[in-house]
Length: 526
Ligand SMILES: Nc1nc2c(c(=O)[nH]1)N[C@H]1C(S)=C(S)[C@@H](COP(=O)(O)O)O[C@H]1N2
Ligand SMILES: [Mo]
Image (tube, rainbow, N blue to C red; front, side, top):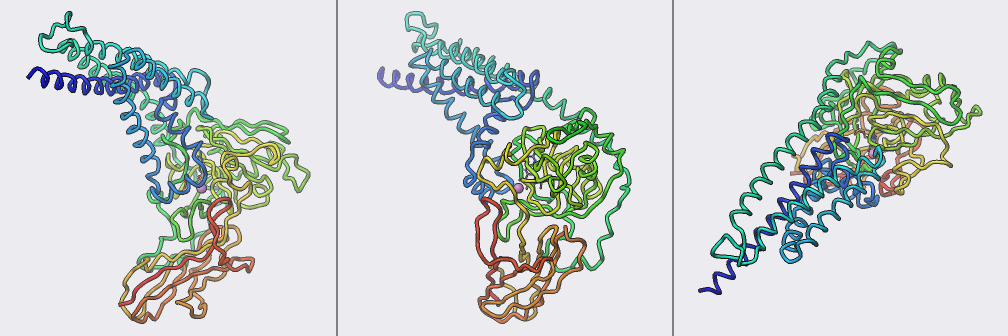
């Protein structure tokens, strides 16, 4: 009877020690959240550690994560961090029951890791960014020490007649800690949300001026009415999103500034959001795609953008392109979250519609797509051109500086490859025999699409019908009425760009400069 009771008490104490670890972890994160409100929301440990993890993820793994989790990749990462932390906290709690000081020391060690991650983030503003993690760790370590202390009171001093621990003291301390942590966390969240509210208000207050140079109207024939085809214009709500931001930056347009400086700049420029809106704006139809897009993949979208022509700003700063003796051949665009993207100066100044965009499909940029201002350069993959939440443009050289993705095995220069995609029928679809509309999109930004062809099984290539051209910077829809016969069939598409070059059959991976190859869909006609 006694043995059973001791065993049960030991089990209970073990479980309560694990719970203490969990409570200590919770208190640590809550305290960190509260302190981060005084420092910077981005300095909170989960965000900092998650960001550092993203930065250190090898290109292949990042690609796999995008392929597997798609746009939920960040949610999966955060969930992973929280689950890992919870498991560690449970283990540290059990450890503390044996070695009380060591348990607390372990909590402090995690705090140091979090602080180091926060301070080393590219957007870190200095040592202060380590404070939230350290303060959280101290709170967690002390709490763990106190709670586990209640579980290890020597029998002789125990107020509890039954076991060797202070049941009442533990319950009181644990409850108080849980309540205090919840309160601290809630206050921290609310304060951190405050600056986001200013940003939201500043976006709501924006009225985009009419563009001085409106986009040429999209020809009626550019939009096909085939069920299942990607719409010509991608609504902002379904436009793909690719970035490293765990927390979407919420930038207040009223305090935002853009600095243009560096090599070959005769006059540094500093611009406010108002300054940009007061300039003549251009409006253009531009298709944007990601270098991580697999053949047939979803990371491409088309929108009507409004912004300031970037070449004009560079000229005003005294910058000349390399072909006219300019000293800088690379623009490093920096975002508020420390991202860097490298773009050839020549491309930006060669007459194409490279812009600092403020609007997307008639609205101010959505926060996920870079509010208040992002860069866009037709013809280049997003990672070498489309800096969201931009705050700095530095003129430099490719020899002197590698941007974020280049340090991670991606190519320095990356023009978009000619690609085409079958949107309908879907892979493994079961259309009925007879005329089946095969349709999709093709793109080769800044060269344009001149031809799209379809092949059924090993048959000859046959021309698809192309929707009307909008510009060489936009994708083109296409369709092909297929006389489908019963049985299994493979449909393959290829495009020819405006320079006459046929989309290559050669399959390459996305790393280092974009996937190539033909998109095929296998269907069974019933
Ligand atoms: N600040 C910032 N800008 C960024 C990125 C990023 O991670 N951070 N990703 C780039 C990449 S890889 C692409 S493909 C485009 C995607 O833009 P979108 O999310 O608006 O579609 O943004 C680019 N701009
Ligand atoms: Mo990308």
